[in-house]
Length: 117
Image 1 (cartoon, rainbow, N blue to C red):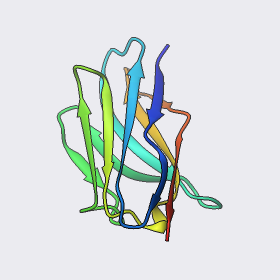
Image 2: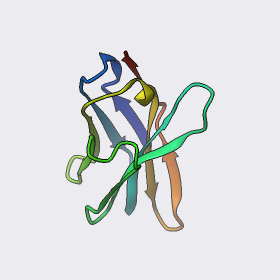
Image 3: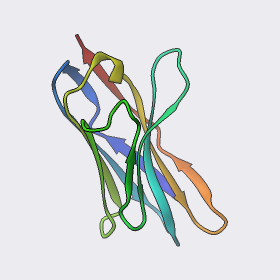
Image 4: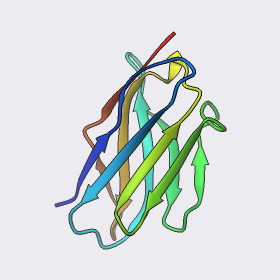
């Protein structure tokens, strides 16, 4: 059974930094993509950043230049370094994994990030 566990959320002032981590456990035959999503109160969940199996990354326009996604294939972990945080970055951040054939989607429980102004 595949499980994703996020950590690293918390409360930070605007302009500060946080680093989120996602640990993947369980048997995974093939990872296609890992990603971070977030959901602010009263809003839909949105894609923040992705990293493919070959290391290609992509970011939402709102976080480009401030956030960096990375992954460690050997350790089955993924991170999101968030700098220059803004109040609008507040939300629950979810780790997401696309893996297997056929492709299945896996989600973590989420970690809260709160940025105060």
